[in-house]
Image 1 (cartoon, rainbow over the protein chains, first blue to last red):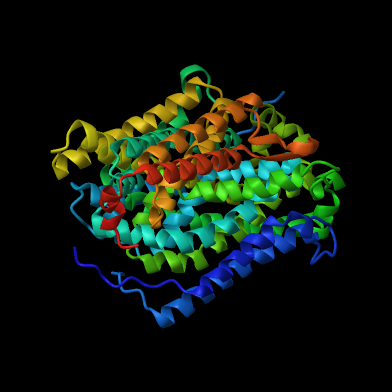
Image 2: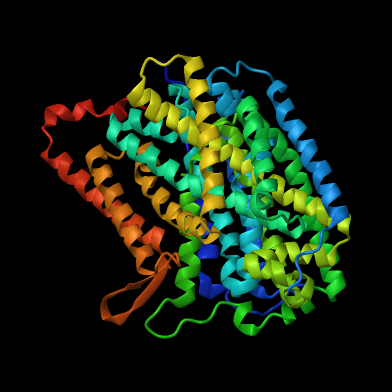
Length: 74
Length: 518
């Protein structure tokens, strides 16, 4: 079977571990203050990481695509 | 106790939307028409879904109707711990980004339609593949049943009530609709319906996030009405990880398990390219934001005091906390908008239930029927078998709900999570060059299944959290699935090392992994 060149992973990927650790280390965010727009810290901190996780994934995607474009898409 | 009142306006809107998606489901068969007499077309939509449709399909697939009802119900009843759904749906995206594009490429190149098929090729082991296939089917069945539970709650909230044989008639009708469009259109039906469902859900959540806090005096007032004990996690005492351990392990374990479920795998493999998956790892978190707001609807229900309103007493008596969100929607919105929201939840049940039944049908057909019973099956026989199995699977789920109490389905779903995660070493580590041996993986799988089930049994199947006692009297309460996975990994890795050491050097070149370009 012919082997197509496969996109190489880069070290940028290691950045993806940051959002995982940020939401798993519970003692860092299990408190009510400071509140933001009425939201206790516990809630807005985790919601903020949803957005940051998306930003990190998009960043890693763009950085990797620039070096090794994926070519298996239809 | 007065029965729940009929909501005529909500019901009318609900029915119009329901009929609309039914028509859409059948039309799906004609959308980007392919030869639906092959399993590739029926069961994976021909792998033609680009970034946008995959976003809707995976969103509808991973964030199910049951989630929409159960997560706010948990926040309503237990408080902050229920918010673990948010870290859980954050952690899944780094996993999706790093692991699954590779699986997609390998499956595409080798023509695999299911995870067990990949495992069979990767390890040359029909036994290991069968274990993965059976685990997938067992874990998915109660999950389908739970989608029907979500629908049941909504139907009750609309005030439709019958007695005797008519009591379950609405659910039966919904089931027939679901079965029929899945049969004719395959994966195209849920893909197209997911678009409508998601638009309705987003409308509901955005409206709830704006209208209800206005009506209750702002988000600050909502949180202020929550007792302090529910607002954050209780701080653990000495010698225990307490609720912190439970929160973190629930998030991590659920995230590791999610993409091993057959329906997630089907959604992933149906993408048109591995780049679609990477893009979606960045785009799908929008659903997690929505889930966060939905979870907080549990607190809104507390602030609104719905459980004390006499008109909802019958609903809470029967559905407990699961009735919190429907009651809140009825209390806070005009009838027509409650109808939109209920339709969103009910249609939100149809999408994953349809994908789940397709996914189990794909697995049964490829990994049991063709692998063991009829290796010479033609394309048409394969797709015919899959369509039939998708019907049987749904019928099984319906019977489950009609015959057994809902709490049984919830307990089985809890077990399903513990079981499905045991396929992680074979599927995810199978994507690496690690020299894993099928015998060792099978032994690891079996130990994980036994240990995990025993842990769940020790809580009488009531809780997913197992209080692990460590040396020195330290207690680490954690998600049983994760603990059982650790046992599984230790057995799989150690036994592989032993078997590799004993293997004759001349046979080492025969490793089937050589066929794969990792």
